[in-house]
Image (tube, rainbow, N blue to C red; front, side, top):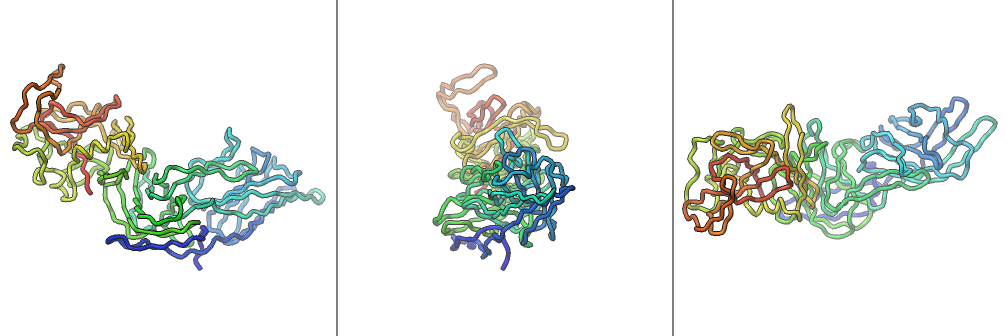
Length: 490
C-alpha cells in the first residue's frame, strides 16, 4: 500500500458540482507510527547512532533537551541511514547534560523539503525555524542516562504524531507551470485554516498558530512516496458538506502580489479527523485572480498591453488609453462621442483584446477599495530589472490575495503627468455633470449650477497617491486623457 505521512482516519465523500468533475481523492495508508529509538552513545569522541525505518531521503528530526538552551541534536536521513550532528554541525555534543535522568526531550520532524532553516533559540525560550507552514510531527518523552565506567548512553523512545486535525492537499506537478525565480505558489481553500509552526520549547509540545479561514497556505514543492508536486497542509474546519473552491495562486515570494492563478471547484462531504487528498482538473485563469469577497470578479494582476494583447507583469507599465478608444493613447485622436452612459463592447478596449475581459465598472472598483473587502498600503522602491515602482497594494480580507496597482500617472496633450506620484485607472462608467456637482477648475473647485446635457465627456476613474487616498473620482477630467486599464473577467 502506498506510504503517506498523514493519518487517514477520515473518509471523504465527493459528488460532482454542476459541470465540474468531482474532487479526486486517493485512499491513503495510515501513518507509520513505529518507534524511533534515539540512542546516543557517548564514548571519548562522542560517537552517535540512531535507528528509524520507513523515512524519506532528506527527512530531518530535531531533538531538544530540557534545561539546555544551547544544544540540540539533528538527525538527517540519506535514504539508508541517519547522520547525526550537533548545533555546530559536528558530532561532539559538547555541553549536553548526560548526568540527568527523568528529564524531557522534545522532538520535531519535518519532511526534507519543508524546512531547511537551522533552529534558533529566542527570547521566549523556544526553538524556532523561521516561517514554516508545512507538515510536521512532534512528541515529548522522558530520556534516561546510563553509565558504565567512562561510557554514558542517553536513550529516549519518541513516538512522533501529527497535530490534531491536520490535512494534506496534494497537487500533481502536471497541473501547474513551474514558478519563475523569486515566485511561489499559495493555495486559497475556504474550509481549510492555514497554520504556522511557531516553535518548540524543550520539554514541552510543539507550538503552532492558525490563520483565518481561507487565507493562503504556503505550498512546498517536493515528493512524498514518489509523487512530485505541491503539498499544502491546513486544519479542516470540521465535518460537513462543503462547496470546495480551490485557487492556486502564483505570486511574488517577497512582495506577495499575485501574478496568475488556477482554480478548481467541487462539492464534498467530510467526516472529521485527518484527511489527505489529491486535487486534479484545475482551470488555468491566466493573469487573473479572485480576491474571494462576495461578488468579486477575477481581477487582472497587471495592466493592459493592447499592442501585444496581454496583461503585463504587475511592476510593468501597461499602455495608456483614452476613454472609449481601442487603440493606445494618441494626443491627436478625437474623443469618443455619443450620448451613451455605458461603455459598449465595440469601444471597450479590454473586450477588443479578449472577449472575456472588460474594463471594471464603478461598482467593481468601489468593492475593490472598500475597507470591508480589502486593506491597502502605499509602497515604493519595488523594482523589476532597473525600473523602480511606487503604488498601492490591495490585499483581500477574504483570502489574503494581493494586487499591486502602480502609480503611473496619465497623459494630457502628449505630456505624462504625475508618473510615480499617483495612479489613474478608468472605470467603464461615464457621466453628465449635474447641478450640485463640485469639480476642480485650475486651483479652485467650482460647483455646477446648470446641468451640462451635452455628450458625456467625463468618466469615473480610480485615483490614488501616497496620502492614503484611494477613491473613485468624479472629476473635471475629460475622456481624452490617457489612463491605465486594469481588466476584470467573470
